[in-house]
Length: 80
Image 1 (cartoon, rainbow, N blue to C red):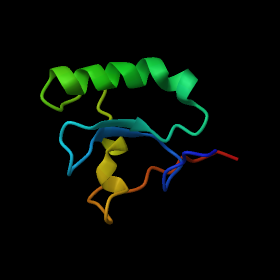
Image 2 (image 1 turned 90 degrees about the vertical axis):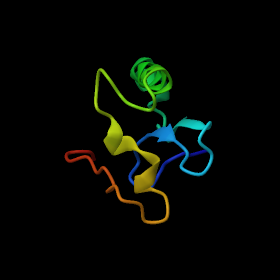
Image 3 (image 1 turned 60 degrees about the vertical axis):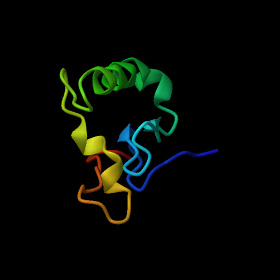
Image 4 (image 1 turned 180 degrees about the horizontal axis):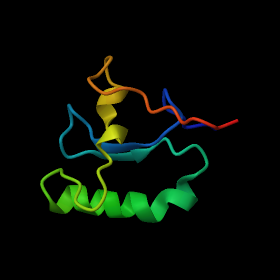
């Protein structure tokens, strides 16, 4: 089962229509590798009124996938 998003990258954000639903998904098999950072990002969103503190991960927002949202897909260069 593949859980890829439109750009093969994670979503780390609150759902825009369900404000108490925090999304951490779409890691496409890299979840174990990225789970410590994703967990930290989630805790920062929950503790700081929806803001990141340590790393700015706003480019992984749900908006880039939602109804042609305001964000842009995050494509990685050099991935084969």
